[in-house]
Amino acid sequence: MLDDRRQKNLQRILEIEERLSEIKDVDVLLENILAFARKIANADAGSIYIYNEKEKKLTIRFGQNDTQQKMLAPGEKLPYLFFTFPASPDSISGYSALSGKVVNIPDVYHMPELLDAGKKEKRPYMFQSSTDKATGYHTTSMLTIPLRMTQGRVLGVLQIINAQDSSGNIIPFDENSEFQILHFASSAGRALEYAYLTNNMVLRMAQMAAFRDPKETGTHVERVSTFSLEIYDRYAMNKRIPKESREKFRDLLKIAAKCHDFGKVGVSDLILKKTSGFTDDERSLIKGHTCLGAQLFTPVESELDEMARNVCLRHHERFDGGVQGYPGRFDYMSVVPEQKMPATIPLKGEEIPLSARIVALADVFDALSHARVYKPAWTIEDAFKEIEKERGRQFDPELVDAFFQIKDRIIAINNVI
Ligand SMILES: [Fe+2]
Ligand SMILES: [Fe+2]
Image 1 (cartoon, protein in one colour):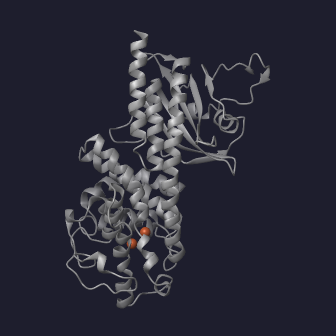
Image 2: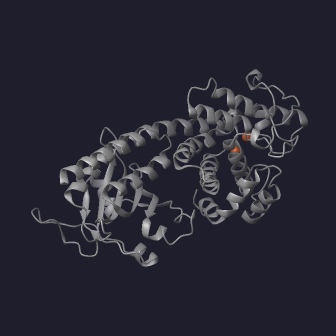
Image 3: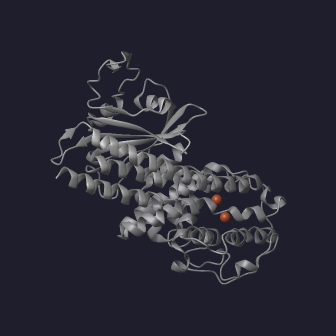
């Protein structure tokens, strides 16, 4: 009987590991690592932390909590987490990150004074009960595991909370689930390492574009990518898009959104660095960045290439097909740097790929709500008003609706990235 259960669990872990290896974006992967680890140990809640070894800091990135989630309206998410603190051994996650050790605590409110009864070493960490106090949640059992790269460097910390038996009673994490999660954490670490490679490469390319165009800062790119993911999540829920295609799309979108202005590397400095109005000729030269960006992802060799190409090429089209949208119907491969774009017939509505319609909205909202060399930042309310005004004109109305449904979350992200 037990063997049968173990066999099933092992099978499930193998399937989960296979799915992990297909995820490309770091944030999407972290979110899934946490969800899968909770599933393996039947844990009610959990968090995941990124460890910055150089600065000895931990950033909490994702929190999941089934009990709290059940109290929210459908489609609503728990608060957006992005909180950095010094990694020190007096917190459980800090101790785990610094020592590389697994910490399995049956009850955080009744921890023994000694770390290990045999060694007589005093326990350095305390349980911080402030989150429990603020939320009314009661943490009992907790399993904290470092996530490592192949060479052993700690990338982050996985913390799962309140293991449950089959009737939903809170129980400690037993040896068996500790063993399974440990095994899972090592493949999660490998998947994470690989995702970081892709992520770092994309961020370096974004940095290259930012060297050319001071408007395109790293944080702009991060925010546009995070907003895009959130808009899509809500839109996908509204449209009842099946979970499997949703997972795939959001993973690709998170990365593709960061590439939207890569084509600016092919636009002259004299134009990009101008701080006042552009002439018609200059405007027409800037438009070429859409086609040049798309060329970077051509020939299309993967689904990510395809989405990144669509985002680059179409993020300045207008939903209503207005003439200010570009590049329109045009052979993007024929464009060379410093070439003026001719007038074309614009694309309209769903002719514009969904990924590009989403990034268009996120990009404009972020550009409005932040200062640029040529303009001060608009207030966040004015930025929202402008998006509302362009509903059905510049932007897809269904995406604008999804955007307004998650207004609080957009503001929260805007405050921390
Ligand atoms: Fe652009
Ligand atoms: Fe942008």
